[in-house]
Image 1 (cartoon, rainbow, N blue to C red):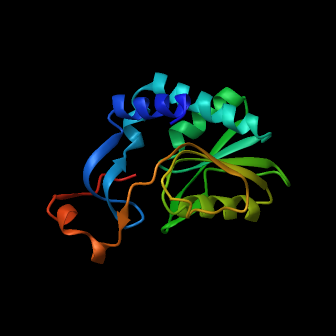
Image 2: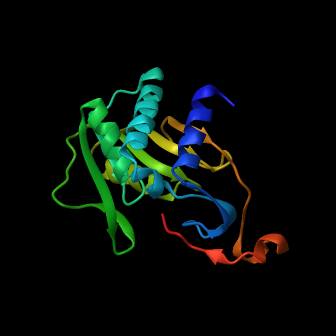
Image 3: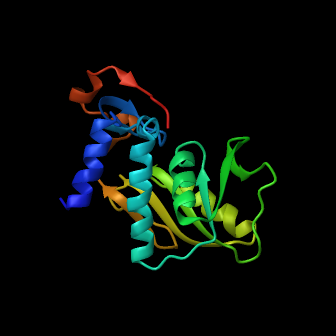
Length: 191
């Protein structure tokens, strides 16, 4: 594991964001591991460092953006801090009738370059919704930056995607939970 990934994993462990047990993820899949990024968000020093590392990765591959868009709730804090450090505009998408939308007067200029920032991606549903929002609003989605990619390579986007940490813990459909995991009480901590 690279040194920066070791530091990132230590941040998640220290802030108690990396949990073990039996969890139902937002995707509906079951797992023995859960990233509760809200725990990291209590520690602004950790948020600042994670945003610094994530911003460095965007710069390393040459992503230039005018705006950061984060899907609520998970991406809100890290998206805002990354935008602050990049000195760019920050907006967010939120649920309305079970779909992500731009509200609160948020608009995008034609071809405005937008970076989508998310906390944890398992299947990438909120990221895909966010990319569609940017396109529909006339913006130019130039990339996706996430703290943790736990998709095992399954989440694909039509723009460059990068993460601070790639960890793939096994996930299971509700009807295929193994006996050892089924014996542990189920938690749905939220995302």
